[in-house]
Image (cartoon, rainbow, N blue to C red):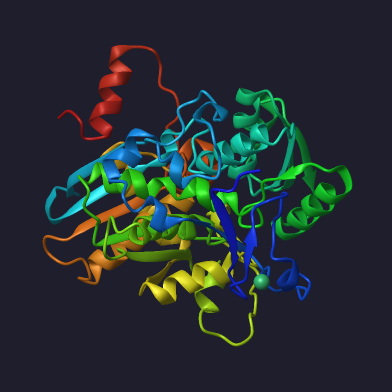
Length: 415
Ligand SMILES: [Zn+2]
C-alpha cells in the first residue's frame, strides 16, 4: 500500500497509517453525537522533511505528485482538471482599482465546477486501489463532478442528492450515465444515506470531508495560485464556504508549502458564507455546535451541519482567517456586477465570494496595493433560476428593421 503519507485526526491529533481505506478516526467517530459536525475528520500528512530539498519548480514539473496520495499521473482522468485561468481585473464599474484583483475561474473545469479537483483525485485513488464504484451525496456540483469524472475513467458513479437540487446539475448527472438517487430530504439526509450505502455495498465514498482525499484534491488550487502569482502569496483570498472543505483545501495547499519551507507565511483567507447559511461562522469558538436551518439561493453552500467544521475552524483560528456573511440580495448584485464587468457568469455560491470581496472593498478593508484573489467555484449556467429575478427576457419583436429601430430607440441605443 501507499506509504508516502499518513493520516492525522483533526480532533484528537492521533496519527494513523494509510493502509486500508479509512474515512474517519475510529476513536473519535465512535463518540459522534446526532446533529453535530462529524468527529474524526482526517488530514493527510506527508514526510515534509524528506521533501524539503525540492524546489517549487521541481514540484510543479512533476505535477505535485510528491504531495498527492496517489502514485501515478496516468491514474487521473484525461480531462483537463485544474490549471484554471487566473484573470487580473484592473477596473470595476469604470473605476480603476488601486489594488490588484485576481479571479480564479474554476468554472473552467470539465464539469464546470471546482469539485472536479476532488473528484479527479478520489477517482485516481480508486483506480489505483482496484475500486470500480464510487458513491457521493451532493447538493449537485460534487455529484455532477463525480459523474463526469467517472464517465471519463470508465468507473460507476452513484449520486444521492436532495430532490430540490437545480435541474441543470441533475441533468448533468444523468447525461454522464451515473445512477442518480434523488431523495425527498435535505443534503444531511443524503449524506447519511450515502454512508449507509457505502457500508452495505462496499463502494468507495467521495463525500466531502468524510473522504480525506477530497481536501487533497482541492488543495491543488493553492499550488496553482502560487505559481500563477510568480511564486508570491496573495494578501487576501476570498473563499465561498458551506461545508468548509474548499476552505480547508485552500489552507492545506499553502500549509504543505509552509511545511516544506517554500513559503514562510499563510495568506489571510476570508471565509464567505451566505447570511442565510452561516453555520460554520456562527459556531466558531462556541462550546456547543448549534445548527440553524439554511435558507439561501446559493444552493452549493447551503449547509445545516458543516461537514468539515473542526478542520476548517482549526485553520481559521491557527492562521488568523477572517469571516464575512453576505445576503442573498448582495449575492445577486455581485453576480450581475461580476458578469457585466468581467464576462464571467458564476453560480450564486461563487458570486458569494465576490460579494464578500465587494463588502470588504466598500468598508475600505482592501489596502491600496494589496493582492486579492476571489475563488470562483462554479458556472452560472448550472443554476439559471437563481438569477431570474434580476431581469426579464424582452418579448419578441416583428422581424423587420422598423421594429428593430423602434426597439433600439425605446432602449436609448439610438436617438
Ligand atoms: Zn481522533
